Amino acid sequence: MRVAVVDESALRASIIEEGLAALDGCEIFTLTDRKALLAQLELIDPDIVLIDLGNPSRDVLEEYFAVSRALARPIAMFVDQSDDDAIAASIDAGVSAYVVDGLAANRIRPLLDLAIRRFNAFSRLQSDLAEAKGKLAERDMVDRAKRILMDSRSIGEPEAYAELRRKAMNSNRRIVEIAEAVVTAHDLIGGQ
Amino acid sequence: MSEDLAIGFLPLVDACLPILAHEHGFAEEEGLRLRFIRDVSWATVLDRLLYGHTDAAHLIAPLAIATALGRSRPAQPLAAPFVLGLNGNAISLRPDLAESIGFDGTLGDPRQIGAALAIEAARRCKGGRPIRLGVVHRYSSHNYMVRYWLAACGIVPDKDIELVTVAPPFIADALDSGEIDGACVGEPWNSVAVDRGAGVIVLATAQIWRRGVEKVLAMREPVLDEKRPQIEALIRAMRKAGSHFVDPANWDENAAVLARPAYLDQDAALIRRAISDHLVLRQGDRPVHYSDFMFQYREAANFPWVSQAQWLYTQMVRWDALEFSAEDARTAGKVFRPDIYRSALKDIGESLPGASSKVEGSLRGLTQVGTQSGSITLGKDGFFDDRIFDPDDLEAYLKALPGR
Image (cartoon, rainbow over all chains, first blue to last red; front, side):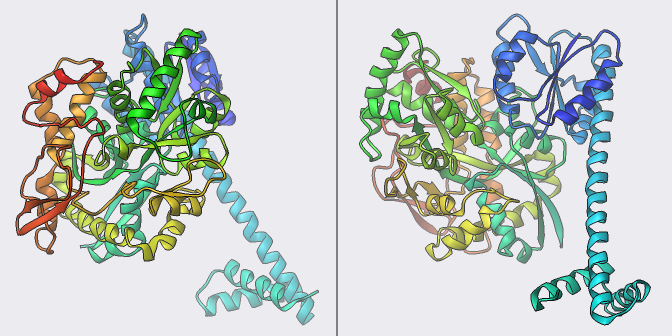
């Protein structure tokens, strides 16, 4: 079974590819470049195409499939009515699947389930990463504020932190917000 | 009632009414909180609508009808109780093609341009490389406007000129690289291409049909039934947004809002030009004014005329090579919901058309039409070839159309 994974995120595409490669009898092709997408698909002649919902080439792809219905191997959306749950799950995960006419549902389902799991895992990875970056940026901001207080008031680090924390509690704000205010004020007023 | 509605949209200027309803507090006044989900393909806007990620969506009108008829997805009843705008699209060509058909720096006559294009199309066919035009989707008014125009000028679409699907953000690239020779797309994408020198605007689609239905606010019928008060509140909020949008005093502010990354993420200057019905046709030229280039509010622009839905059905039959079906025509007509529109606006002093359907293209000048409380004035609404669409005889209309 030939599977084409269309995704402009090379990272996500390789995560999907790795997962699908574990399935028996699957040959995986990843297409991350929108140029020559259709020409590549024609060469590959896939049985299944997976494409992420955020991909700007979805309309081009669907038009290609609509035209292909007149050809030897018509491809349709994976819209077997009895599998509405599977489609809903794939939309939730951010992936849509197109299968060649006549492919048995029991061949598609495991593949789609795996793709859904991998897509969901990737989303979680991305939000974890965003959160970690956010936390790092916040830590950095608090460190800068501490240094400013230590320098300008000749106090030690624990004291500087305690000042920030006290101010945060008294004004019902987060420590990072107070830190931001300290750093901004310092930049504007013109410190060393 | 403080209710949430999730609205799907594509980054185009004509997504403006729900966005501005939110940004200017009109939705809030109606007790609504709007949340927007931005996508980059119509397939995804549609899928999110069908699978409940969004309650309503900015959608190309023919796609709402295609979905109700089960084309490319299993049939699902959709409702369009509000038209988000008429017109707003243009046809851009690569500068070399524009020059070879006599572009002179102005928006020309559709008949003359079409005639010149027919000659050039024949020449390029003989040369083995037919002219190729890009449209955003087969179920879009862009596709239907271009085909209507070409066929009326004696050019057989798909045979004399190829038509391919290209996503709006890539139109400029595709023109530049020669992948396509021209395109029909909504703003700001024509202007993006012109700005880069990749394209020249030769026609506004309003020159093909002066009152062509473009985008609708679409939703699944069960969602309409379940959230009817919220949908009607949204309709009222969008009417206020429309009034705000067409006021020149607000053009700068609205262009700036729409330009934001969360919405169109484009140059506010380009958006402001489109909003004010100005177009720069060729790189470096001064803007020209084309009144009614965009049409979001006046003359009952938002009223979902059943005849518009049925015109779209006839074009679907024509270009998908379907058998005409009276039942499908009825289903198509039922997608547009003037009853909801009237119900939403009946108590706030709006002039609401008395009829739900009209003969399209027949108004030669300013015309009074009856409303429930008096009348409103509609402007010229003609097709460039003077053809008239009578929704009472769809088959006759189809038979009379050229190039089927």
